[in-house]
Length: 116
Image (tube, rainbow, N blue to C red; front, side, top):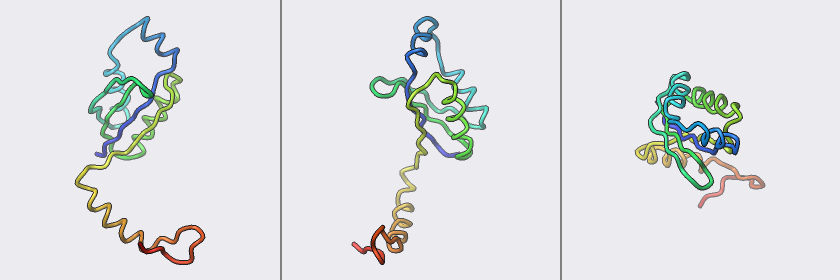
């Protein structure tokens, strides 16, 4: 399974409900992730631009996107984004492939690939 980071914030209305009815959000988050065939790895709370960071494993991009759409459409969240995470050991493969692509890519306005 691939790893994804899902992060964002809660609306002011959601925070008001939290204050009135505090509780652990791990179980509901886990339930939503598992409904898509994924696994909750970790739920972090944060302060600053984002209120939470969720690390999850999903079988594919469709499952990860389904989670994002389902929880995003609840109206409880704001400024959410999902990032597919890449293992550190995959970087060398990415760079090798990028070398081949860079030699074939023609930038806008150019007539041929630009070689560095």
